[in-house]
Length: 303
Image (cartoon, rainbow, N blue to C red):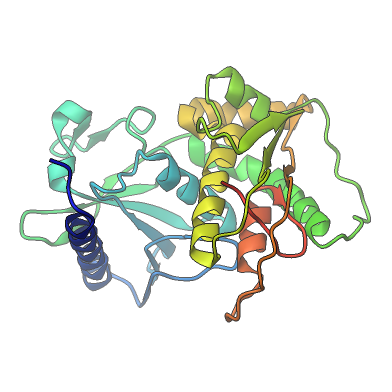
């Protein structure tokens, strides 16, 4: 017998409360001078769960839960874009419950052995574990992966693409056209078998993701959710993060050699969407541009 909408709502509420409780524990246990939970960033629809200033410098913490594990597509896309958005040298910490960290999953806390490439931790510098006493243990488990170095190699091209997407969004001609040699790196993502989410409103043309054909806007909340899906797919295709370190390394090498570039993705049709009266009314289109999507007039509609 399928669950009723009310039952589903109660389950989602409990999961959300559990997540908030875990974030609160991170804030309590993280040895830091200044700590902010759920920080807002102008380039991100969603950034780290906790941002703090520790003795090691700026630290970003991401909480993995059963509802949204660190291996999920959207989680990894959020972490990658946060890597680009936050300053170089920021420490990235994955917070995970010890019940989700077992030897049979390739992570041995006794030997402090973690295989970043195989277990979705390659974008992090350290692992923090919530123990049986519900305390968050920081500093015991360091992670080492070449992915972090590849992200830094890609930082420049990422911002150059963002500049072009933002200019196109506002109809501004770039003073210096961006060089786009070779093929779009997104071609490589398709060759690895990543389909566009099997979504009828995402298509692929000449290395660009095209979105939004014959779609009506459904309000701000639905719009943000659709942009998140588009951003996730773009991060996977552009940077190969579904292949871990190997995908990032391939993208970095091909861009450096001039054999590939980051494509600017486009939105086909625009829907009439009133600009929201918020502190940051340009947030949606700026975050879309940061992920590589050019929109127009603040209107962005995808299915």
